[in-house]
Image (tube, rainbow over all chains, first blue to last red; front, side, top):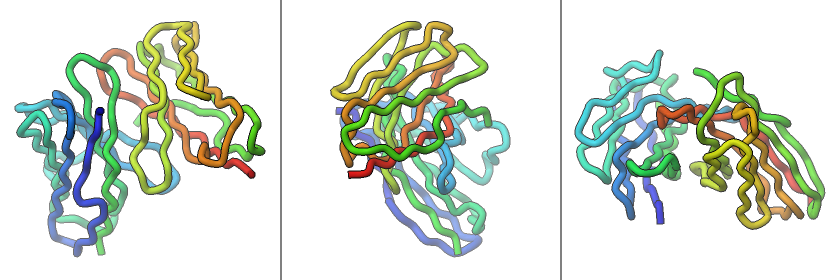
Length: 115
Length: 110
C-alpha cells in the first residue's frame, strides 16, 4: 500500500519551454500532496503544498507563476515548470498523504535537465 | 528554508556493525519520520514516531522520539550492504509540513 508514482522519471527540455510532471497516488486518496526539489547531495526542500480542489500554498522564495501546481483530483497532482531555464534543472519529488495520517509517501522523483 | 541537523554527515562502517545517527532541532516537533533514499530514487519511509519518548522498531531499525521533542535517533543493528544510502529525518510541528534533515550518508564495507 501507499504507492506514489511520478511521470516522467527523466525529462530533458530546451530553455524557454515548459514541462509538466505528474504525481499520482495509486492505492490511496491523497488529500494533500507536496512538491520538493532536491539538488545533488543535498536535502529535500519543500516547494509547495497542494490540497485537492484548492490553490497550492508556496514556500517563501518559490515563484508560483513559474512552478504551476494543480491538484485536480484525490489521486493526481501536476507540477508545470514554465519557461524553464538551466538553473531549474534538478530532481523534483512529490509526496502524498491522506487526511488521517501524518505519514508522507514519496514518488520516485523526476530528473529535469534544461539545456 | 529551515533544516534539521543530522549527525554524522557520513559514515563508513563494516558489515555487521551497529549504526547510530541522530537529528536535532531548535524547535519542538510533534512527529518525526525517518526515511532512506537510494541514489536517483525517492525517499522510502522507514519509521514514524508520534510521542515523546516513543521507541519504535522496524526489523533491524529502531528509532526514538527524544524526550525533549527536539531530537530523534535512528539505530541500525547488524548492518548489511543494502543498508547503504542516505538517511533523512523529518520533523513536523503540527502543520503537516515536514522539515527535512541534512541527511546521513551511510556506506557499508563488506
